[in-house]
Image (tube, rainbow, N blue to C red; front, side):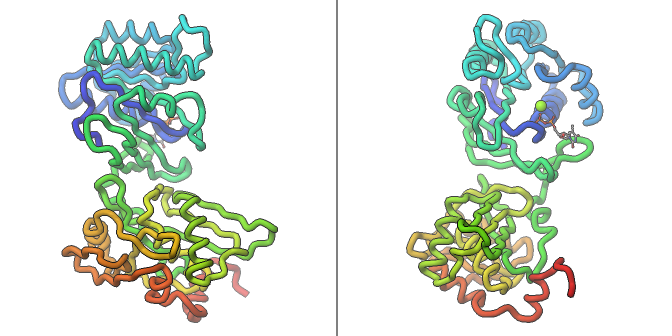
Length: 392
Ligand code: TYD
Ligand code: MG
């Protein structure tokens, strides 16, 4: 993910919600760093005791002798430890739990966090130590810390995923030494994090062919194409204000797409409660997924399923028109590799050598028609759609 690796003297921030696996990730990274050559690493654990961390490390495989652990919440003590160990990699877990005694402000406050990060950055530059700061963020990204540190550091990585699912993604939102936007995917297992070699296949493993309200998008996160199933469910709204619950995709995009479906496709979605989510907890933020979201919603509304061999992508404009997306060839190639054979795409999309049969459409309405999502569901679709419903 980090083209160029952990550059000496650089400061990286690993942000994520509590419990997502940041400590596990940095410990495994430090272990790997030490085993790659005769390099020393120092992990300063400000939230856990050395014993706790060592026990975890033993569970993840043995801790190399060159990987030092030190538990303190005091920045000066941490820097002194770094002076005596002389590590090539210094990890501070976490930046919120460490404080500088000369600053009259509690640990975790914006003032402390910024002050400590600044001193650690100075130390990193002065000694050439690659430094990794762990920072907690809450769901809304607030909390003193990571967000205010982004401009202070060279690299910002966010570790995301659903705590209740095993899938984790690490996204480089800023990287001074290489391409940003790269994503790494991991699975949290009994024995720690392991990197996923074929994430698309895992993400699609539970896909139910013939299910209304489901559509698959070849998303592009960084350089890597990733097939993600998007699901929509429209349920009759009972309240005054229909509910909009969105997970994994942008709720603003969903609002726009609902308006487009209503106005440009003459689908009456307005009174329904609308639920949209990406399967596996993967975040798909790019507009390339617009068409897929729209088709999933249209499919849920009519109860007619998309053919299982179809993928689709395209950015939706306010007039319901479709725009091209970046790197269609890569998306199509990944879809072909996973067995998809048809793609519904914006006009003038270069198909490349994927072997998929592409159907070019100019608007969402046209895509809905091409895919036969209008009209009542077939008996088979009606049966599949109510899968799991109590039988009469
Ligand atoms: P942790 O790295 O402590 O999270 P963070 O530092 O972001 O708060 O990991 C938290 C969760 O990960 C914890 O609930 C247990 C789980 N976990 C595993 O499932 N397998 C493992 O091998 C480890 C070390 C943790
Ligand atoms: Mg932790």
